[in-house]
Image 1: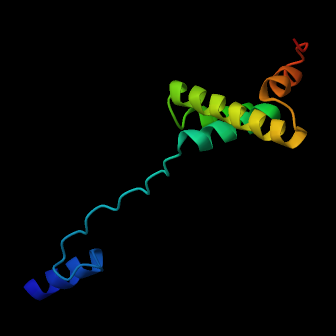
Image 2 (image 1 turned 180 degrees about the vertical axis):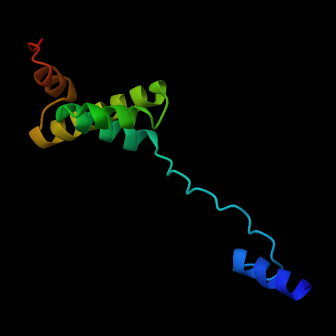
Length: 102
């Protein structure tokens, strides 16, 4: 009779020799995004007017971190454009914002 219970236990929990249930499987962990990934996605989504992606990126990091990342992205973009145009960063920044040169 005990042999039959062993067979039943193995049938119910086929991966376990002793018939005990296996440890519950863990849900895959969500990949952590850094503030620069969040900023890049947020800004690109903003340009494309994709509110869903903006909301998604906003949830990856704190509002403060996202703000810092967007500011850093803006600085790097202005520097890259200034070098490309052979102009000062201030001239480029003012032109991008439609402000008159001083």
